[in-house]
Length: 486
Image (cartoon, rainbow, N blue to C red):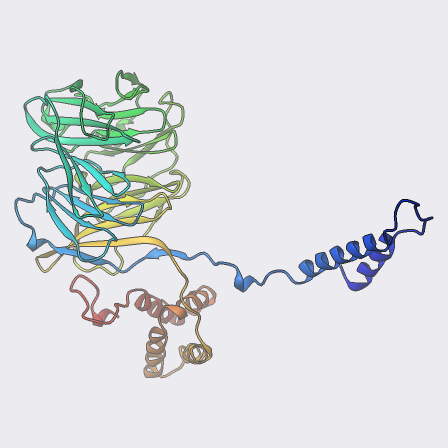
């Protein structure tokens, strides 16, 4: 709308002269003035919208640099380190849990408080504010960690637990309700529940009985809570997937049809589960397999489908490290040294490249997924025989500050010299791009997408990689790529 259109509209809206009313002395031109003011303000908004630069720009999700929690040589007491778990509280606190040990930080940064736990094979933690709860084998205890205070808040011995080789623990919760399944090697699965946050517990209920110890040796049951039901998955003696469901908080259980596992896949060996709303996602790893099968039900277990194939998870998948988590509508699957994410509930998967920049071998990796879509991992890395426990976050980071005029000129100059004939000039140009740091990375990525020259693309990729993996001031840790790599 231009000025002529506005003037024409104003003329059309001007009131027609009429005989004055006897009961009113109001100036008849005031409504026209109000109309004109309104139209002019409308035109101003249309012609001069809010500046785009003033609108908040969402940050890019990417991996932060890892932080060391502790050298594993400093662990006190017995440590099997076969199972590792990770929990993030709403206020940013972190608890990393392994067999017999936990490390707690109120903000996910040093200093970390080391706490010895009363058992091994911890269950997937349940988070309630600053409190992180878990169940351990060895003594069948329900343990609550206060992450803000850095201490064990409560320890409750689960009552009347049967004898046998204490092996597996599974925990789920909703509000103040807690649900626990205990697995005895070559024995049974027992269910207990609490309605007061874990202070008191019901008597154990026997849900399954088996004699073959190979059925439970891989901790291959799964317990999850959707808003309307509890779900328990485990294997039968003849390696079928059994599904049990409770809609009354575990007072009664019904058997539901399990998903069909085709013979060409082998035999099911490890089960893991997660929920998104009322959708229940079941991950099943075949014996000696690298690619788990992903099943999902949206109708209370009446039917099961396979949304899409999960990519192979590394050369070797350790059963104790296979995990699936949900958060922010995402599914995240890890198997120690591999991590993939699905934004569409399992139809397609993307490798998050979570371990880029790390040296050595990833021996184990704990995983959590937040309701905001963030992902946390706690890999245990072995370099030259030394083990270190790390924390790394995949989250939305604010965009870097833009380059100033001098930085833009330096960027343009270095880009122009990337295609020179002298190798020393090209190398110097790459060094200058790396020195510009993260503010230059976005421009370099755009330049990489547009470039078709293979040599130029290679130099751009090298500069971007070195910017992403550049360590802050100080000594580079031995578990991170050294100066020669950057």
